[in-house]
Image (cartoon, rainbow, N blue to C red; front, side, top):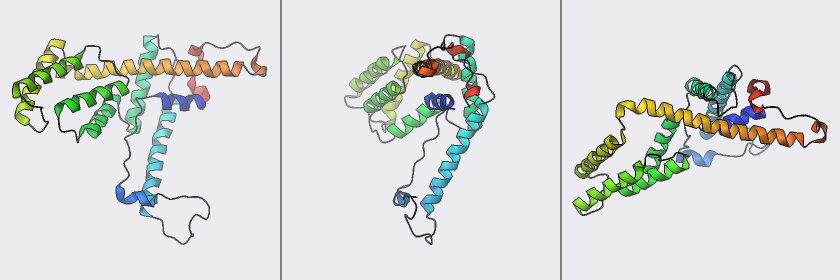
Length: 243
């Protein structure tokens, strides 16, 4: 079971929609220790909300474990077939458990982090920070080209570009369109880019899972009762046996 928990915790593809507790309910989060409050007190509205959140997360987790108990995952990040199968299983879990895909998670993060940013430059720098924290690489150098496009527009308008300035934001968008064309990026290819991203993430997660599995087995072999045991090939491990 520990290996399965580790798999779920490692997977960035299984991102649950963030839960935001309304301000009016913050004061209702209380201790559930024995005798924390007289039993005659009515259940608080906030308690019911937290209970619902708990059951929702539990149901999603149970759904994920149910799928993992049926699907074969080979821990081999260097095998394209194994990577594709792992990505397929993660996709199935997301769909069945109603979880964010990685691109949806990033989109949500961008919306939450940038909604109050007034100017275009701070917005672009925030996007760069989100990309770095998400572990994504700017392999095409698009960020530098976007900053250059912003520099060009701001030099033309002689002032910082505000996101509320629709006229000049249109100029920036036109410059971004030129950047996309130069890089060969087309809106109609976005599903392909998302699929490629999914495979890259799956490969990275399998690398992490392999590392964790090897470390766990090495730790076990250091124990006296296992000193004569030979460490198995991580590719031979079947996660279903650990559920």
